[in-house]
Image (cartoon, rainbow, N blue to C red; front, side, top):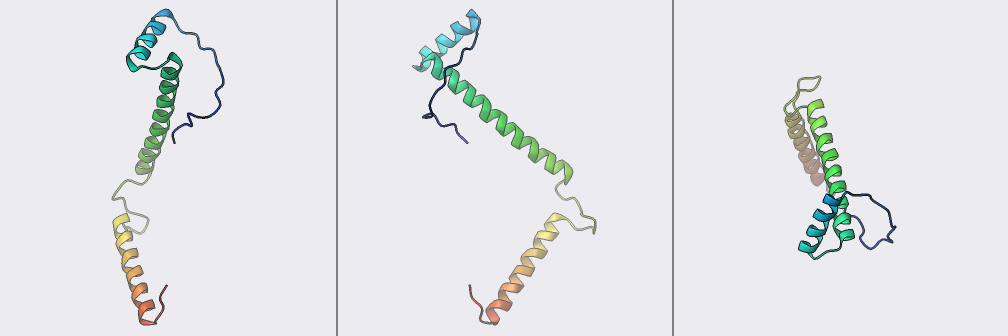
Length: 103
C-alpha cells in the first residue's frame, strides 16, 4: 500500500555524517528533488521492500508447511482435491439446471 504523500508532515531530526549529507545532496540535485523528498522516498521504498519481504516469507513458510504436490492424511494431493471440487460443482450446477433453478 503506497503511503499518502498528502498527509500532514511532522518534522523530525535525523543525524547524518558529512559523507551521507554530500551523497544525499548529489542525489537530490541529480533528481531535481529536495533533501527531504529524497529521504522520504528512501524511507517509503524501504518500508515497501520490508512489507514485500514479509509477504514473500509468509508464502515460503506456507509452501514449506504444505509443499506443492504434498499429500494430505488421506493420500490426496491438492490438485486432486481441486479436480474433485470442480467436478462436484459442475455436477451441482447440472442438477440445479435440470431442476429449473437458476441464480
